[in-house]
Image (cartoon, rainbow, N blue to C red; front, top):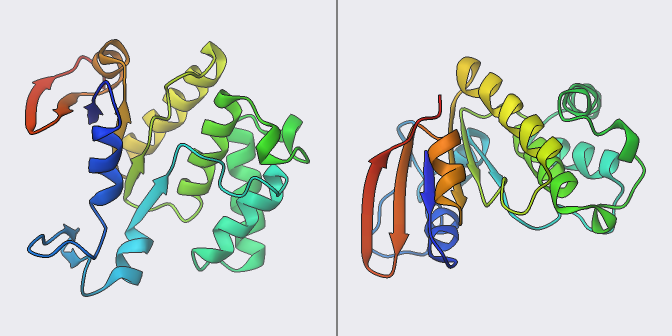
Length: 186
């Protein structure tokens, strides 16, 4: 599903879903209350922001660190990092600091960090906005495999065209209005 907006409304909507400081709002992820069990929900949700996971770290180290922060053993984090580097075609930038990456490579690294512990739900902030064609194809391929085998994806975008092409459902978010429609994606 894609949440589409011309501004940052969809991004705020997505990142605010799991914010435990929202009185009167109850969010449950696969039956787990986000307010009562935030650590359990963190294991169920892979969140990929539009910013570098750790700008100061090389890609490989940022991925491994993300895995260990999500409770993977160092050995398992290394294994998953290698698998995701293959899937996301990141080997050439293994030692490049995240701060020096193009938008497409940065989006692929952020997606890799979100996927490390194979959560059943991915929340992605603009993973396909401003990326090159090669990165878009890689990201769409990886997300296609993920949705076919593991879980669900909710992503934000500023592009209605991308949302229609990639997502099966769209939610237009803007101000106080929301409008739903069907996409043509998987």
